[in-house]
Length: 357
Length: 256
Image (cartoon, rainbow over all chains, first blue to last red; front, side, top):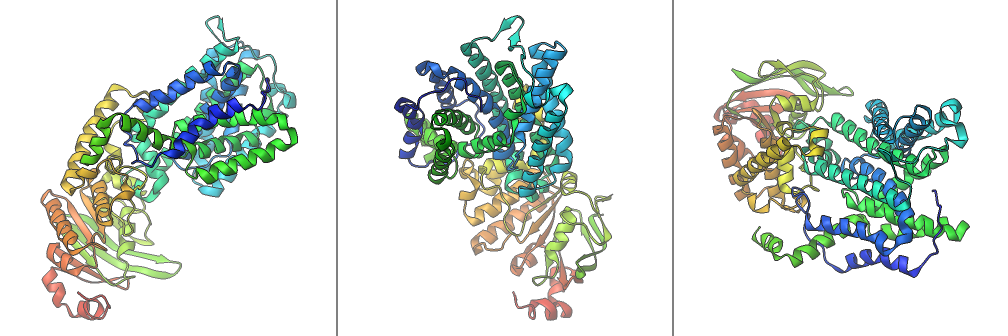
């Protein structure tokens, strides 16, 4: 993981990130929400936390930017893994395809950042469509292996096609992301760019989830036979969500190249794919905000533990284990449920409805 | 005219013959009961009709269209709805979402238009929700519409599965043991609903061990025994059929 600014492990950081999860432990479990309504009060609460975080913690801007990029990938993967219940260990490759598309188009062909941004999404989506057609017939472990293989093949191609990708050292000097002459050259501007994109994509994903597509995804995850029995084309649904989640990863890759100014194979390895899957699982399967918070948490954690050098990985592992033990269904699922309870406790209306039914 | 025509269909699993040249016709607007001891091939026949498995030999046609070997979702789109022997509702979704997902093919939208929530998506969702609530009201589940489906009782889950099949507006409904595990009161309610559906013009095939129910609601009863069709007649005639009595009604171990 790229780390420009090493942060000391501070009690205040622990308080900030840990506080929310601690609150979530205290309250009892309410009913599942009905996914029809769009922006609820709790959505504004989540968005508020995200907007306020860099203000109370200004030197986090760079890290939050990076976390935002990973959060975009995790958001897309959440649709594929958390909603449709399919595993992918190759999302770092789509992320890489986005980054390399942007890097090559902007440095070699002088395409604008915005043009490269959309081209990155299209390239990742196209790759996903081509490999998804054959491999999405596989399930479970086999699908995991096939996507893992795709990720490795991508790395080999990137390392070997030196003329195009610069080989092992990668491409340097990618122009900073700019829109119509306005360059995103400070951490604050980059933070706004990344989180603006993320919020846009959250809205898109939320629309998907509350529509017939979201229901089809959950149906395919729960029982493919039952889904087919009501006329849902299981293969088409899986392929569609695979393409969408790859496009999200491609967009994130484009932002990554535009913010970091580089694209090199080290950044897109299996480690990143696994990290993405961890974000979705720790964040909570079948939630959209969970993976975003998990992305922030894991990015921060990796960075904070970097100070401990060789001990960082074991500590990381123990923390992940503890999280999985205490939040087996994901932090986001729990947090979601708790916040719904909290908000509905404040607004008595929702509670009265529940008593009626 | 027969809505569903099964023409000498056979199915074997690794040499074991599950169905042997079974021919069956279901007339439009009737209820066909399908009985037989365990392992007689009833559920296999359902799997073949709904496309979950393809037959070794023979042909199935629905409303004049040959559906042999088609994919399950293609057959469903033609208007064949079904329930499962072991309940296959989507427990993680709410009750109303189960019904709404059943309407999948009738609700407008694709990946892009749903993601952007274009005006017609909103309209479609609203209409679908209204219709879903109507179906839930018909099944007596409206009070639970926001519940996660897995929190419903067994009988309610069965009802929900029936509702999901109804949501796609089927012309032919395949019910695989709808009364299994229900209390007598629930069975009575279910019979009423099924008869009401027949009144709405839906053709129904029902596999059932609960013979009281089958004989009461069915217009015709077919009996399968060891993969062969041994009777296909009115309930009264089937009850008197000697082969049926020997094979199933007394000797099958699960008498009336």
